[in-house]
Length: 217
Ligand SMILES: Cc1cc2nc3c(=O)[nH]c(=O)nc-3n(C[C@H](O)[C@H](O)[C@H](O)COP(=O)(O)O)c2cc1C
Image 1 (cartoon, rainbow, N blue to C red):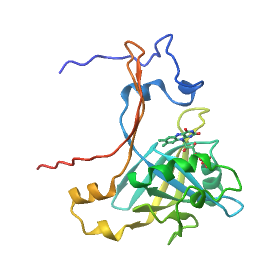
Image 2: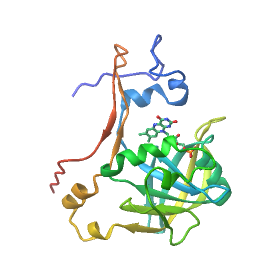
Image 3: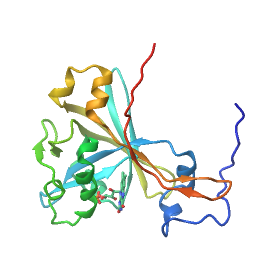
């Protein structure tokens, strides 16, 4: 394999798809374009209403003493404000069957909105944290704040690390083997639009699932 090697300097005359795109996101995100799993971060607002944030910038890491969620969160979101205040949140992994409801959480984003219900989901209480969970999401991870760090100096992106203190998994998938589980869960992945750095051409992205899992030893 021969690789085309790229520097990180943004090509001149790159056209944004929407104003401010390459300020909010790195242009490289659209070139490298690795799919991220989609999740919904749920928290309580100061007024007790539920907050739901469709997000996909984050991952998980752990060792013997714990499994941790790391999310890269924009500090202007309500979620960031809520996590700073309550120090607790849930990561809910939705299925493709609820794609429409997931995107409705973006529309219902006012302070008085009960975002889980207004998006068409059902709120369920968490077991160990003060944060709501989404009943229709087959995986819910309950998280407690550990630490925060700016992505870089003066960045509006904050990396938030939370210890997973409890989790719930749809009882219909708990006993399934890996292949059946993937087929049943239909976890969504966020594919950004694809930017060709040589031509500046953009092809649109979208949501995708793993529809033909193959495993081999
Ligand atoms: C696949 C995907 C698509 C998104 N599309 C939008 C969008 O069109 N507009 C937007 O403001 N945020 C979009 N977001 C980001 C968040 O969902 C949004 O900022 C969120 O509603 C902020 O919630 P909060 O302020 O309650 O924390 C998207 C996120 C993902 C993962």
